[in-house]
Length: 343
Image 1 (cartoon, rainbow, N blue to C red):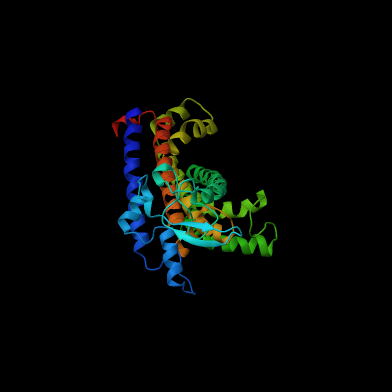
Image 2 (spheres, rainbow, N blue to C red; image 1 turned 90 degrees about the vertical axis):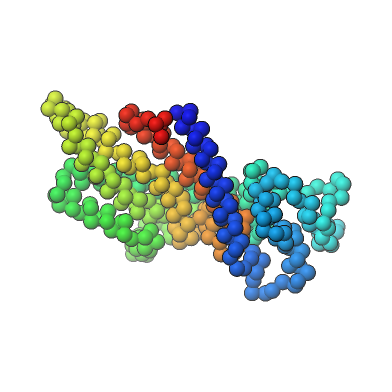
């Protein structure tokens, strides 16, 4: 286990730096910038703003400064204000004793200031929005596991029956339909035709039910298919026939013996599924006006908010890698024959 975790940690460093580097240069290669708009700024103002955020530096130097902690900030611009709070002048250097918030770089845990939300840093935005997205993701995953595992077991216990055919058709439809299409149908049904749930907002359990169900339904379809396949293979195993021959109750055979082996494909899918729920919540959060990380990621992309987009990208990379590692570790609990040291 220790060697496995050490290897994973080393690959984690390589993965994060690769994603960060590729994302940084791709994002800066796209035309446009965070301060472009319908009304063009005066050249002096635009130059000052770019100097404030170091966008006047060469791209390689911006990258080193963003990664940090490198001492590249001697060119930073600092604003001086008069007694009324009005901006007086931009200076290149800090006088002795004047306080300043200096960007420390990603390696120090600082994602920098947001280019568009000028009163907030990226860390503050993520700190406020990530718990909302995680709560929505947990609720969606609960829906997905409950519906998917139940449907997969019911389908596997009656292969070829009408119940099996109906559940497989429903699962295929759930996989084929995007979550925003499912959300549109459910909004029409449960908000307008049957006014049972609110259409948007966040704050109560009633606000969470509809977006959580819409987000988890697609993943429930995948889990149902995987559970059915795993259960059919396990139910045909010799140890299951032995359990039946010993006179164990069918419920005991299914829940205590067959289910553990049948869930192995589902467990391997839970890592990517959880990551997909977090990243797939982008559209759902916009549809239901949920102030989560996904909404900020879309706004960062459309507004060219470089630091916020990079912060969310790195955050999602860390979450995906950590969840996949936990899934591999969970494999050894479900099947003792699997050894992590053999990887």
